[in-house]
Image 1 (spheres, rainbow, N blue to C red):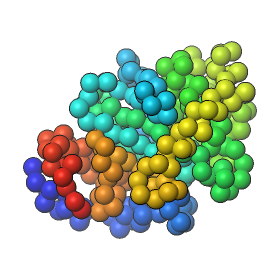
Image 2: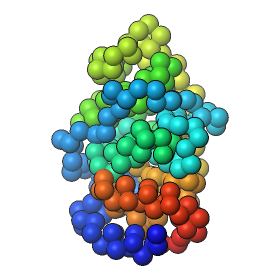
Image 3: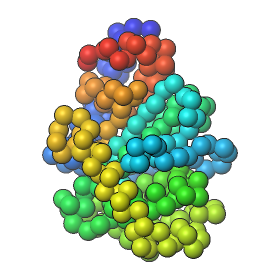
Image 4: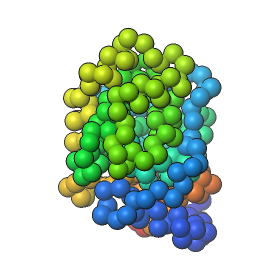
Amino acid sequence: MQFRTVRRLAAAVAWGALAVAAAGCGQGASTASSTGARPPATYAGIPDLPEALAADGTTIAVGDPLAKTVVRLYEDPRCPVVLDFESTGAKAILAQTFRRQVRTEYTFASFKDDRLGGDGSKRAVNALRAALDGQKFAEYHAVLIGNQTSVEESGGFTTERLLALAEQVPGLRGEAFDTAVSTMKYQDFVTASQAEYRRTGDDPIGPGTPAVVINSKMVPEAFRGFLFEEQLAEDLLNIVRIDPVGWQNHRA
């Protein structure tokens, strides 16, 4: 399949989706969420989906370790554009992760705390790492992002709220998880993940969130609208799988 197909599909992306893509958190533009009422992708009810801390110690991997397509997502839990992404294009990534065609890796930023005040991003990232211990990361991630409303300004991912949201994930609450959340057990992970985010791309402060890397190649600016359209995101992943060499060599 030729990348001409991608360009034709790009023409079908709504201007609104492209505008959201260009205004990712951390990129100096307004980041007000336009789709906050929509539910994000959910992992609930999907059995035997492997979850692990990646060897780099900064990233959480979900899905088949042998999957040939690897999608790395960079997200700040307080970024409303992340909710837009999780409500749209991330669903296609999720579906292929369930089919074991894709392994999804998450690297979490926490720059919204420094820019807006509070510590909600850091606390949320710590809690997500704690959920991994019980193999409940993916389900908790869906719940956490889906209940993001108003936390960008307020920093509202408090310890109390993070524990309350964990009630929505069967089997997650317990002494180990609650203690890890309350004591910021994984502060080192939070710091290392933010540092890894800042090393990504050409901008020394990081690429903005969400950012998506497929098989070690950042999704080009011309294709960013695909990330906010579920069907177009599915098409892009299919093209990468069919022609991985063409994807690596493609210049938008």
